[in-house]
Length: 110
Length: 254
Image (tube, rainbow over all chains, first blue to last red; front, side, top):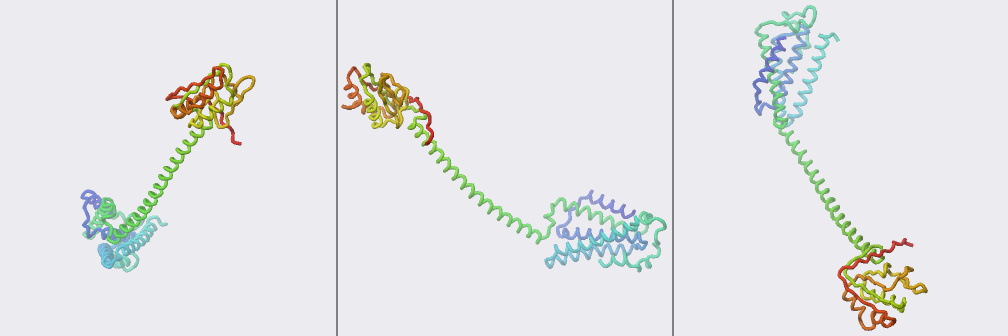
């Protein structure tokens, strides 16, 4: 519940402010968003399994975002940024799907 | 990335977080539980940050149309694609313009050929007597009150007119063509089987002065007619506009 509330507040602020992303950060923002989404789905799953820990969530959220951005940054430096971005998105996409499947099993027992 | 794995999959975390016990009853209860602690505030902050970043990214992506946020190598790829496409299209334009020029000159030639053919058809129609003709010329009238003028005189007159450059002519209501003949019988004169009544009128298209001179030279048609006797005489009248309107039905090719 608190997650949904906070998400709504963040979306509302984003819509209200309409910020422009600095040019240097533009390649990393989508990757960071996907990584954070993965952390969020993992947290929901952990909550459903009763093993949710605030500290683990905070650390994994920040680390996910930073590591993903770092990977893409390194890829950009060695000229394979586009491919690495795709790879990161694929990996996070798979993890999001598996977490979503676990959440679904918990909620609907199916 | 490995940070999240033990949290979601291993059982070690559940031991280190004993205060969060599995939700009693429905799992939905676990989602809606609200606890106001400092840690929950941080979680809420992060979630709010996520929502903010999400909206920002969507907004940036929509407003920039994708190109401004694209990477350098992607932009180079797009540029190369566009250049190759432009080259291809230019080649196509060249080919199409070449074929257009070819078709234009071809239609010019066809137009010229068509005009030439129409001109020939006109000329041949006049010669064959299937279409009417008009223009300057003379009217040769042969008066023959006592029917002393023979068919040979008329034939001579026709030949003289042809030699003098007559383009086409008619005698009486008969169009004169290459095969025209004169006959003389008990019932009078006939041209191509059509009876002719005196005075015989030749309507001739051609240069009036040349035609008139050819008729009036000594020993010419006028003299010949006068020599036939019986009061026969021939007269020439020039005109700038004559119409040869007698027609012949077109003949089927044999």
